[in-house]
Image 1 (spheres, helix red, strand yellow):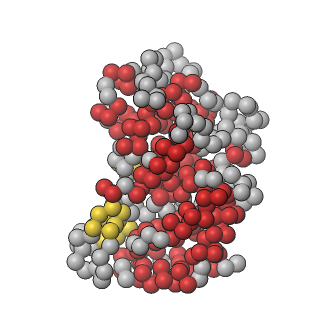
Image 2 (cartoon, helix red, strand yellow):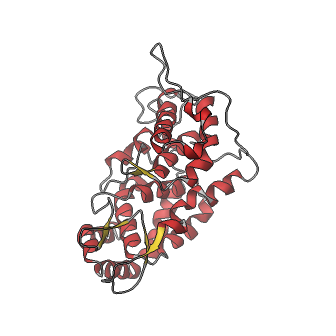
Image 3 (tube, one colour):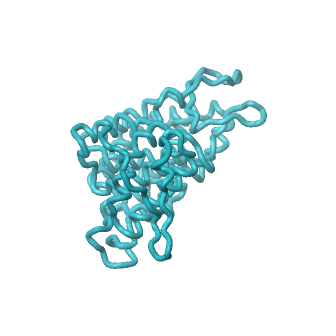
Length: 311
């Protein structure tokens, strides 16, 4: 294993009391058997700790050890959030300035696993809904059945992007090489599922203002409309970073201006305009209209996005 279990327990992100909570349980049982609530707490301490107190070796080594297990369990849910959300937040805070080659091929392994977790076969299922006009394979993180057995958006709507989709969209924007952005956009737009299409439209509308900024700041995620935030995204970066920081920047803290590569955002938006507009967007709108619950949940999202992209 490339990241063996550390010999010392990880501690909480709090240093001002007499006693500091140490996660000794992580030393005593297999990570695969650890309760998801414990794992979520650990990831919160890593993310908030780096944001508040800077990079510390204990948080780095424990996150890298946990990472393979986090990816395997990424679609497990706790308190209405999937583990992948807090995993992405912690990953970004640890690897704020890009993915370093922790071992030969580490970056490729990350893109072949964490970056593709929403595409795992076990989270895409054939619908049992007999009312559909045509069959689709549906993503479980986007779709649920209501009391009448009809499909509807699961925890997302016209005013709020799907959390899991949002964190992975920002993951791609942060870490993909510029040369791969056009192909990535093509792959996003090629998925033939109306709920996927609807969720992408909501995210695009919500992310527009942030991505059009000359310097995209993670703190602006919390102010987007529709909302594109996800679990723990509010602790990305640091209050000691640059531009919108509360304190002067310090070398050991993440610099807020480095949240997204400046060259990726305009290229991504240009590719969206080139590939999605306008014929495909009309086709997407027609596909969404075949699902009454989806069409009702999205309200005027396609029209609003059309207007934004055509400006």
